[in-house]
Image 1 (cartoon, rainbow, N blue to C red):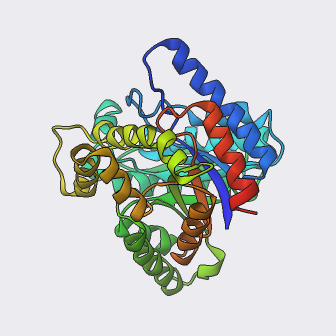
Image 2 (image 1 turned 180 degrees about the horizontal axis):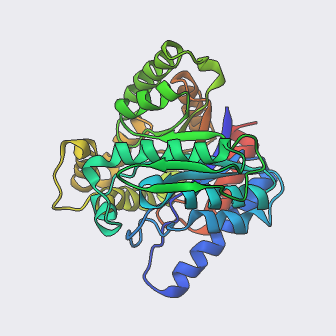
Amino acid sequence: MRISLGYELEVRGRTREVERQAFHNVIEQVVLGDELGFDTAWFVEHHFTRGFSHSSAPDLVLAAASQRTARIHLGLGVVLLPFQSPIRTAERVATLDIVSDGRVEFGTGRGASPLEYQAFQRPFEQSRALWEDSLEAVLAIWNADGEPVSRSTQFFEIPDVGVYPRPVQRPHPPVWVASTSLDGYLAAARKGYNLLGMTMLKGIDEVAADIAKYRECLADSGFDPDTRRIALMIPWFVGPTRDEAIAVAADPVLWYIRRQVNLVTPPDYYDARHATHRVLGQLAAGLPPDEAMATLREHLMVVVDDVAGSRKAVARIAEAGATDLILQAQVGGLAHGHVCDSMRRFMTEVAR
């Protein structure tokens, strides 16, 4: 199993200095991850989510990290395709692939926040069609290898133009699709795309069932399931003992989960597509902290444990069908020193 890092880029505090330091800390963590042997550093894209995620320009952060690292892959997890022209997506991702010498992993998604769609003046109810059309256009641009491309949809125009630069990887970086629903898993499988998922909303058992159906759909669609990668992103802290791990990480993890729900999905928004977010929000906000952590840990929605417990969790995730594990090591404003200690402990004691 390949072990990677995942970042929301949370900022716990409202001063400019706290925000600035958070960016510098995560770049230092990516540098450490490169030294320790982590496979990829994934950065999300979110907008307007104070505290929960300041990662609104992940390609710029990854470009900075690319100049201080040599091996670690750089994951866009994910580019929210509906919010910009596919021309700009193709240009920016190709540029990052060039400056990183071909280390980009191209994660794509449609986003889950109606507020983002409202601000970027895109129709939320057509988010899947927007994503599908945009991804098809980006891949067409890269596959054209600089030759002119034409596309005309209700969402964008590509007027017979050649798009540059071209990515280092041929014909393009690996394509990943992020989803938390079975429908999303199957949409990725039908196209043969790698999968980015999480356990935070459903828990490991339901996610394992969805992964099995994703693999079945890959095979039914003419793709070899063993050639596709399945990554699960999980908030993770490894402490010297279980009690010490919980003492250090329980508050940051619960802080993060509450904001993951309340800021991505506005409190006054109700829609069946967000039902699982609501359930998790009620869990995190309504239960006493000890009970909330016990439930989250039981279902591997989070892993806050010692080395032995972390090894058991890794084994269970592998059994679920994941090929890649993405650790959210920096979660909820957890202190930089604790993050680095947990990263080292994982790679030297859990993953050895």
